[in-house]
Image (cartoon, rainbow, N blue to C red; front, top):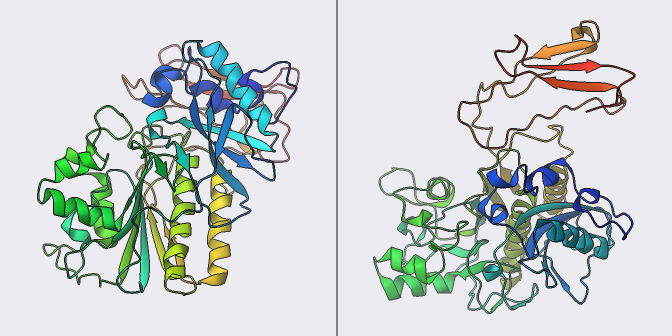
Amino acid sequence: MFPHRHDDERIDKYTGPYERWIFSEDLGRPFAFPAIRKGSSSHITALMEGEGKLAGTDDIEIRIPPLWNEHPEVTPFAMWNKALDPDSGPAHEDAELARCLYALDGTRYRLNMPIDPVTWPASYDPTATPEGWQKPKVKPRVIIGVIDDGIPFLHRAFRDAAGDTRINLCWLQAARADTSAAVPFGCEITNTRIDQLRAQFGNQEVRAYKAAHAIDADLPEVDTVLMHHATHGAHIAGIAAGNDPYVGAADLPDDAAVIAVQLPNTIAWDTSGFGKEMMMLSAIEYIFNRARMIAQAFDSPEIPLVINFSYGWSANRHDGQSSFERAVDALITDRRKEQPCTELVMPTGNNFANDMHARFAPGDLNHGKVRFGWQLKPDDRTSSYLEIWLPPDRDPHGWTVTVIPKGLASDSLGISEVPSSPAL
């Protein structure tokens, strides 16, 4: 993931194992997100870690989403490779992605999921006020952020006492773009637009969502999720920020404003976490940024903010030091210096006792080996990843991994320390 010489532009010189697997035509691509599976991608999202220069070239346009912190530890960005020929094949795409990263001359990069070109507005101004946006009728006592998929922003649960929406802004990250926008890709729905849609279409919500690009059968990352009887985003947004007479809980007041971000609905398919970080970090930065915009509209310091984020993944280092975790921790820490009431609500996980993690110590080695089972579900055609993390001071060279299919031996997987062998 570090820039290398320009004479050998292969993507494996710029990316980690997940990227190499997922973007490989012969390995993980057949099981990846539809956006990756369909082939060459001229528009792609990524992360840059550490300090670096994020500036485009004549044929590479770089877009950084609205940020709260002007100098983030990890910078989410999207790039458009104008020189990519969609009919050139995977090998050329591989070299083109590597060329793009090389041209950026930054520190360290993580490729994330591609985005459809129709989600790329012709012009983007990250400093612009969203078109048609109006500040809330009253200064919010609290701002509630919701990051999820399938968010029904027209639902009655998000109206105030006068029947107007409490959802101040909603970024549909995977939706078709308008000609100009204050978000780098997708579509931003303002409070004014929500109330206009309701007035125009009344109870015909499906037509309203189609008009807002929130239902789009031609885009797999949007699709017809909001035509379902229930969605995850409806469930979570309703709990975090909705009013429902059937629940019996006290209504949230009119001064509880909502900012929502709808992630691509396919983003939860890959449980490794690959492809999600840019979208999720952009969502948090966006909510922080727009919350500040609301506060400034009232000549106010930062307003209390609570974000619900019901997403996670099973892979990575699990020590709080991944790039995404560090970036989010830095955002929360810095905002709390200005507004102590800044909270991010995270899930504890849905995996329960799935035996997804194991730990071994030197005492577990038997003649330099440790053996354990690796359970793969029948007919599971998704990519299944095995990560082996050694202590920071442990030299990985000399370790080998052997996978034995069930039926050939009682042990399904073994790790051995063989000083004379290279690590696999």
